[in-house]
Amino acid sequence: MSKPLYQDDAYLTEATGRVVSHTDQGGVVLDQSLFYPTGGGQPGDRGQLTWDSDQMALATTVKGEGGAIVLVPADGQSLPPVGADVSQTLDWDLRLRHMRMHTALHLLSVVIPLPVTGGQIGAEKSRLDFAMEHPLEDKQAVEDALNDLIARDLEVSTRWISDEELEANPGLVKTMSVQPPKGAGQVRLVRIGTGDEQVDLQPCGGTHVLRTAEIGRVRLGKVEKKGRMNRRVALHLEA
Image 1 (tube, helix red, strand yellow):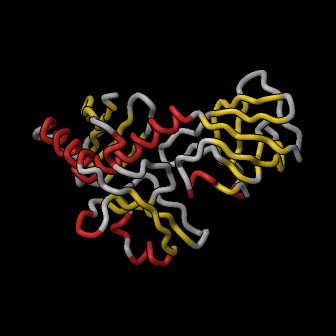
Image 2 (cartoon, rainbow, N blue to C red):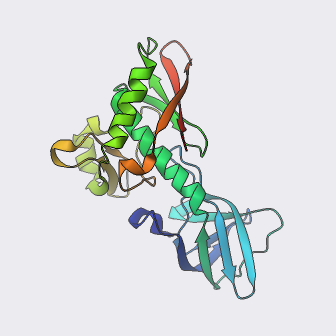
């Protein structure tokens, strides 16, 4: 099992690690990972490993068996040997855009308070799918409400609850298509706002900004009908 460093500090951009194995598909598993693996609609991180006088560029990061985080090399890259001590360097610009987008999508689910049926995070465009029978009455009003929430500079924090606590509070789960991982004994919650200013609380294993103002202004893109009861809402970062 790889220790997920990004869960404790999403702003960490460099770390050490030791190679514990190679996968049959040619991936690298470290004892601890700076890199977030694809999951929950968020793409895997990219970056670089260096060791001795060599280096390996990462094409992406994925989940492996038994809690392993697998670093997928770009084409033509050499792998660090098992047992090697390596330095990890994150593609921070890409990660930060994913963090801004991810937190913005949580807020989108606040201003559109409908069940979420799917979602995808991207550096340039993201989207949430909603169980939405009728089109948005006022798309500009939704965009304005979302930007107002962002501008409030609300604190974003995390905490852990047990599987039993989550089962006792099913309303925490907004996503109909992806259920939070259970079975490990605890589930991570992401909270936006504190005390009377709390606006959102839901299970999430992804990376987020620490305050909503870091997101910057956003723009709603197309709202597309996807089936009788579903609509897809696109989201763009303004900068």
